[in-house]
Amino acid sequence: MKLFASVATTADGYLDDASDRRLIISSPEDLREVQRLRAEYDAILVGAETVRRDDPSLTLRDAEARARRIARGLPPEPAKVTLTVSGDLDPRARFFTEGSGRKIVLSARPLPALESVAAVIRPDGPITPSVLITELEKQGIERLFVEGGARMLRWLFAADAVDTLRLAVNPALRLDHPCGAPRLDIGTAYRTAPHTEARFGATHVVTYALRPDREAEDRRMLRRAIDASRRCTPSATSYCVGAVVRTAAGDCFEGHTHETSPTRHAEQEAIAKAAAAGADLRGATIWCSMEPCSQRSSEPESCTELILRCGVARVVFACYEPDRFVRCCGAQRLRDRGVDVCAYPTMAAEVLRINGHLFR
Ligand SMILES: [Zn+2]
Image (cartoon, rainbow, N blue to C red; front, top):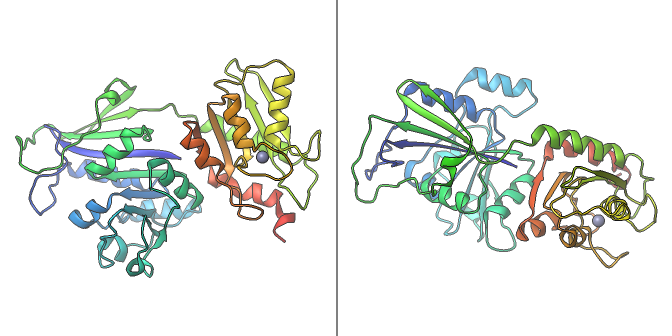
């Protein structure tokens, strides 16, 4: 998933003042630009504190932006996402009552009062940034627009989960240490990232690329993995999957499920070819048409364990494994062990079509 954080601060780094009314920091030109950017995303994320404190509607009012989304086959408005530990969210908040977009709440506890106004997702364990990302990717969300507030930003930056930071500063607005006002508190590492600058009216905007944009290459390599999966002979007991592994030195090895053995998965086939060639897989990237398996009966080691054992640094896939044979937790386990994982759920439909024999 791609995370884009959009933040507006005063010249002295505050996100809001300490009053009950929301402080408008950005110029009208910048607010329009933020609306335009929002329209490019699958979902908008805010913390529950922001829902309680600011009661934002997070709707897409621009008719042209809505029309552009519809023309691209997207819903007219992005989904809205929040997460809560306490469960203290009012179903009458504008977050739930306004706009046509899906509303999604991640919560550690049951929220019966919200079930009629939102999809409530309850992960098995504590909600970490990687759990949030995994759960939202499973909902088909590929691009997430983060609007705050302060705690949400701190939480995501501490986990190094943000790809792009758009920092809009009002150079004329200073609050001079107001008591209790939320302040941007995300460390200073972002300042050394490659960035571009722009002005929207009186607002000064710096956009930092915190992680390299690999989308074009990922889509190209996933296409190759999906093409490899078409060479599989459909089986009633396993998915047709293709995989391409590329070493840090740039050598590629490709495989598909059952290519050389009736029990081998695509990842094993590709990694076995790399091993036969004497390649070092530490720091490698693997592109798979489907999420690497986390549990299996026909062989002792899952593809997730194999990928971890080989020291592969990055795992990219198109489709989360459906809950047909087992409940797969490959992506989450890889993330928990520090592997960089990225899913492209908009490419999943083709993978499911290739595996249509299992869903008839
Ligand atoms: Zn596997």
